[in-house]
Image (cartoon, rainbow, N blue to C red; front, side, top):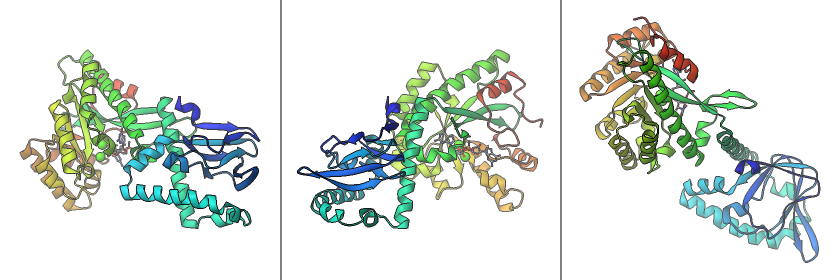
Length: 409
Ligand code: C2E
Ligand code: CA
Ligand code: CA
């Protein structure tokens, strides 16, 4: 439904909103021209004429008050709608002092604006209100982000996200042991987009929670499908696991474990075959993270510490959190050949993991030299372009119904 409101068209002369209307959204002008005006008895007083890229109607979004000016399309106009909840979730997440400041400044602005609009009229108000370059830049960035968020919302409704699967190989046997799920966006115009273009933006908004629900379900379904495919060929083979990347937003969700628990029941998935990948940066809030991890472990899920070694206190995390698997960050593997210290660090991580009874996955294996050394050090699992790039679901299924072997060791 909200999809309908994502972009709106107004023909020349039509009213976008009138003074006194409830303010439930703001607009960004994609094309056209909009006049903002207020009335003084019977006189119409034009406050601004806005064009492509301008934002208007934003005040009501923050304080929920009725519109104190009207907006009219001067020519045929296309607008992107910025909804209430997009702003609301940002305000909730913002430092409370900042939230308060915004509201107070807005209150003052509203009352002063009433007093000064006559004065403003006599001058070039576009010039008066023109922000400085740096303000302009951050304003454009904020607007771009809001537009991207709208697009992401639509992408979720239109089912444009897809999962790719990167094989994780048992380095002792050379067989595929499981997959890491990696999200992509099949954009209607821009093609297949990497998570680098959108995941950070999604994480800044409440949208990541909805995308997370979708990811959880897909991961459970994929694990089931992979397990059936393997068992059809060799009934005694170990079930493949599926790694799921968890964002900071999801880690703050108190109902996460219960929701995932319900999903595995619904899909018949064994929770120990779902590996939840969390990065060290998500563990800074110890208490929240520990409760989340415990709730997931109580339900039988496996916890993987992703990008291990890149945080501030990697070792203390191991002491404090019940982790099952360590994923050695790509940067250590990448520098193995040139930097003997990286090799020594990997060897130490491996020893430590062994003593603590944890599995180790080495990420970002690109060269045979790296693979050979990791095997020689007794690393349990490997992942990287040398073994396989992330592949589509059908390619993953082909791999599982074939030999499952990615390297001859
Ligand atoms: P990550 O979790 O560290 O994922 C590993 C990334 O390294 C993937 O990039 C993968 O394609 C890439 N990679 C794998 N092998 C190699 C290699 O040999 N060399 C190099 N240079 N790179 C390799 P991708 O798919 O672009 O994902 C990037 C990041 O986006 C992920 O880093 C993760 O932080 C995030 N991400 C991806 N999918 C999801 C998701 O479903 N949920 C969340 N919350 N984040 C995701
Ligand atoms: Ca990961
Ligand atoms: Ca990683």
